[in-house]
Structures are given as C-alpha cells and as structure tokens.
Amino acid sequence: MPIEIERKFLVTGDGWRTAAHAVVPMAQGYINDQPAMDSGAQRASVRVRIAGDAAHLNLKSRAVGHTRQEFEYPIPVADARALLALCVGGFIDKRRHLVTHAGHLWEVDEFLGDNAGLVVAEIELDDATESFAQPAWLGAEVTDAVRYYNLALAARPYAQWRDDERAAPNDQGDSPCS
View 1 (cartoon, rainbow, N blue to C red):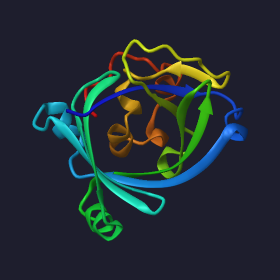
View 2: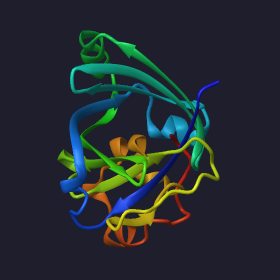
View 3: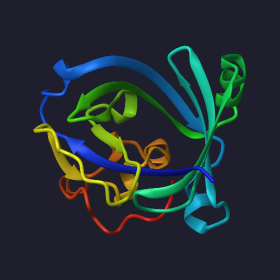
C-alpha cells in the first residue's frame, strides 16, 4: 500500500528562488468537496492535476498529519481536462519550484489566483522519524493545519482568510480532510 510521509511548512522570504532547479505550472481540482470530507461521508480526496505536460488522478486518505495513504495514476491530459470540468469547489493554480537542500528535494508551491500570496514548502520523507536540514527560508510548520491542504484551499482560498487565520498557522481549529 502506497504511503506518503510529508511535512509542510510556510515559506519566509525569497531565498529559495535562486536555489530552484525547475518550475512546473500546475492546475488541479477535486471531484469531491470539503463538506464530504469533513462529514466523513468520503474517506479520501480525489484530485485531478495537470502538471506541465503530464496529468494524474490522485486519491489520498482522509487523515491529518504527515502520514497518509496515497494512490496516483497517470492519465491522458485530455482526460484530465475533461475531469477538471467535473470538479466541485474552486481550482488550485500554482507554480511548483523544485529545490534540493542538504540531500532532500523540497517542493515549494507558489500559489496563484485566489490563493496568491501563499507559499508553502513540502518535503517527502522515507520515514516519519527521518531528520532533515531546514533551509533558512523555512517558516512555521503547518503539516497539521488542515486549512493549508489543497482541498481546503480549493474550498476556501487564502484570499478569504481573516488576518488572525494567517497569523496563527498551527491553529487546532482545523477539521480533517486531505
């Protein structure tokens, strides 16, 4: 069973930009929505993503934290475009910058559109207890703050957040989703 072990952080400053060795434009949407996940009616998010010239269908278990089941399948870009038209909620538009730091690959997501102004960095690990060097541009960890999950950002974009939500990244008031 595929398991994803991922940690997510806010990004401070622009120091990561010069270290980026690739940039991939991404557009994604969800077949299910936040209320279905919050209510427990669905136990996995279903995402359609076009990343550069490739497309994938992704299912991720309903869990908060750094370890979840994840299944990802390549699909034709034309199919992804058709599926995006079936998505509910908003769309996620972002640029993913790939940055290698101290032997680990960091994915720095610079959000656009209704989520503009939000920049997060993710690192995938082989083990939940694996240590890693934190780059100087890394800010607060938001792995357990559900509102930073892409499904949540599609339902309630960063542009709609109150100032206190932006100031308290690890607020425990988040509800579970993927």
